Structure formats: C-alpha cells, structure tokens
Amino acid sequence: GWEAGGVKLLRLTDSLILRHRTFNNAGHGIWIDWACSRNRITQSISVGNRAAGFNIEASRGPNWVDHCIAAFNGEGGSKTSFWGDGIY
Image (tube, rainbow, N blue to C red; front, side, top):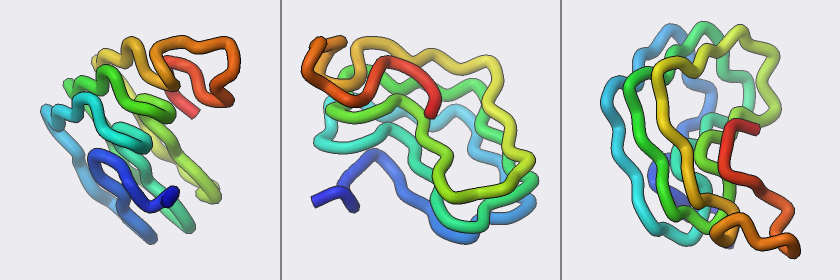
C-alpha cells in the first residue's frame, strides 16, 4: 500500500531530519504528511525509491528541504510513473 516508504511522519512540527538515507524501497523516500509545519530536511539522500524522493503532503508549512540528493526515484524515471526523481 501507500503507507510504505523510507520514513512517513504525520503531524510533524518543529523537527529536523538530518542525514537520513533511503534507498530502493516501495514508496517515497521521506514522506511528511498531514499538518506538518516548521520542519527541515537537510543533508539527506533518497535514491531508487518507487515514488518521490521527498514528499510533503497536505501540509501548510513552511517546511524546508535543502542540501539533499534525490535521484532515480519514481520507477527510475519511467514515463508511466506519476512520481519523478525529486521533491513533491
């Protein structure tokens, strides 16, 4: 299901995700969802995941993603995949 991923966090506030690594899983690399605000994802790597490298969903923010690498996510760049390599 869609709950799979490197990490999924709900209602996250005032947090730091630092140097997280996620590779080759069946969902998003890092997924923060539902009412997340004032969070920073930094110095993290998300490679080869089936969905987006970094996904921020249903959140007003602000949330920051900086100094990160996202590559070969979203079915490896497949034209049939909804997700691309990067940040959504």
